[in-house]
Amino acid sequence: MNRILIADDNEANRELLEAYLAGMDCETEIAVDGQDTLDKVESFKPDLVLLDVMMPKLSGFEVCEKLKGDAATSRVMVLMVTALSELGDIERAVAAGTDDFLSKPVNKVELLKRVENMLNLKDTKDELDRLRRYIEEMEDPKR
Image (cartoon, rainbow, N blue to C red):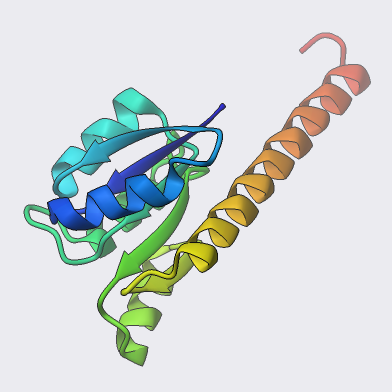
């Protein structure tokens, strides 16, 4: 079962995203600020983080940079969900390493399709990594 971390400082936004995801076969967890997000990524080990940009303690940009810059968490998929929609904000999100970007107000169908696609992509990447390790072991059995 896939794990999704919803990171937003606004309770109504968190509840809405959680309600949208309720029909999916996934486990969800909540984070209320940037530092809480990093802590929950470490403990919950999500496959995907729905990450608000404007949060206390650490912004979503900072959280994303930390996740993508750490080998232990770089494979976690990040979907930034934000009210910011200026071109500069999108460029900054991409520079921070986000895998995708979704503007508020969130459309349920669009969110669910992007989440589904991102989880499928992560599953494919994980399977490819397993196959690569298997091939390496077969080529060099002393590993």
